[in-house]
Amino acid sequence: MSNRARAQNEWQRRIARAEELGAQYSFAAEILRFYVTVARFQENFSGELGKSLKRSSAGAVASDSEPFGQPLPPELAGRFDKLLSVVEQSGPGPLAEVARELRNSGEDLHFQLLTTFWNGSETEALPSGPKDFFARAFLQPYAEVIRSRSNLRPSGPAPFLCPFCKRKPGLGVLRPLGDGGQRSLICSFCLAEWEFRRIVCPGCGEENHAKLPVYTAEELNHVRVEGCDSCRSYIKTVDLTKSGRAEPIVDEMASIPLDLWAQEHGYTKLQPNLLQL
Ligand SMILES: [Zn+2]
Ligand SMILES: [Zn+2]
Image (cartoon, rainbow, N blue to C red):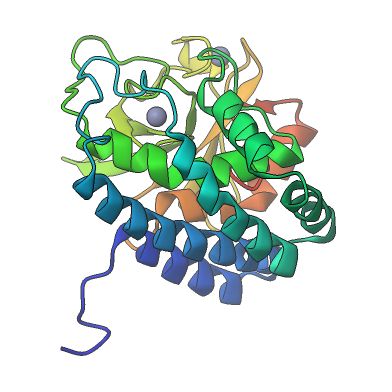
């Protein structure tokens, strides 16, 4: 079987898409290059977690209603160093600096940082200081594994926060449905996807069409800003009816001109993405 024919996992698809968009759009080249190094770490870590959780019972005891209610296993912190050295070598200056400081601070402090992030408040946006970047990038594959092993099947009205980890959505997606698109939201942390009504602000619930402006730019015109004039928040939505090749979280990151537009017009992002944009 050739490399091309071999099925890619979701991390590999994101990496390939980031390389493709980075070559195409100079305004996103640098951040996508950095994203690729982080996502490669995440892919490896995710593979290791899959194996080690299969052996231990740790993955199986999470309760169905609260898959994220279990404390973080301390042995996880032992792998944090690897991410720190990746960023120290290839991250942007300020993050590389923080990576170096963190590497010198020892495993106890690492575990403390990770636990604080893991237990963080449910209703606030994910924190976005430089140390939080590391906690989020590191814990994301673990969160994805915990979520994918959970038996939770969300029902009832579409929630504003992730039904699994209770964090805010990081972006929206429109998937082909009949003649139009069905909107869903993607969690900013565990990357769960859940259906959400199309004309509702995921920040405050505003339903008045006139208060929910949509903006697209010429570059990457399959990504749109969905603003809300009631709470002044915005979220970007990747329209898969216009581009089936898109990898939503990567296309969201690449569409930097839309963030600039939104910020110039006084909107604040509901939840900054992994790269804190
Ligand atoms: Zn989640
Ligand atoms: Zn709103």
